[in-house]
Image 1 (cartoon, rainbow, N blue to C red):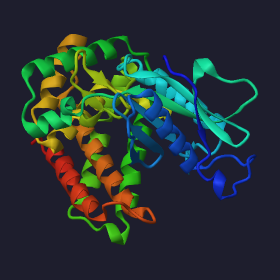
Image 2: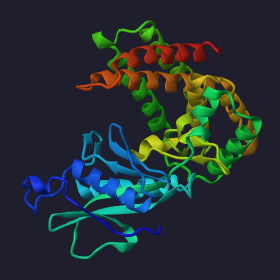
Image 3: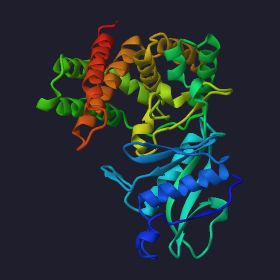
Length: 357
């Protein structure tokens, strides 16, 4: 990555901040904005805040800085933990988006000055206070969810995405998961959803029915789940295969893989494909999931039972409903009006899947 160190004065230094005090998150963000302005055609960065990260979007580059948060089992409170996570994010995402994930920046601190430095140009004697993932900016108008919204998705797009995913799953590292552990993991997810939904503030129509029906389907089809493990079908997958994480450029780029918990990335490829199909359905096109499943089944020589695909879709819908209402558990949730209606739509999808609709 051809970048140069771009020193930025600590923004609050003039307000009396001691020169030896480590920079706060605002200082880091302003340093990264200076970096983009100097190295990305004078870009004025757009800040985007997520649960665990700050993302700075420039003209051609995107920078991702992890927050020093603790969300068990995740603990990013130390610089070392954030560095480890950044390196894992880089490694995992280069599998499906090798020319998107460019490298790492170190934020280095010395004498009251903060610098964003490409890893190859680390300055000895300076304290590294954080690590940043550097990505190439992808065209928003070629994101899968955007193409669905505009009804501009073509058959050639599905063909290209199917070929990319089939090649990925064919070469992916097989996951070393025990049959019983795999079933227990899925059952735990359903039970967790049920506990969250039991809160009075999250009263939703048919929520108990959806949880119970999904749990019963898992019990009924436990043999199918165990067979997937016994046949070596589970892989180190993407972990968060959503429509907004797919960009249909040439070749397709699938980015933002789940990096914070290795166990959550140990998946059946068809579990991920059902998840992507669910998200495409929610975005407005229910045909994409079945098309991809059919094409990738042929490419891999693997045809899971339809009952298993329905179970995967239902448990993913239940999980997404749970994550929707979880936003309302935050002290100051953003867009609070959004989450309960969204959860209700996911619960409806879960029941539809189990009914074979």
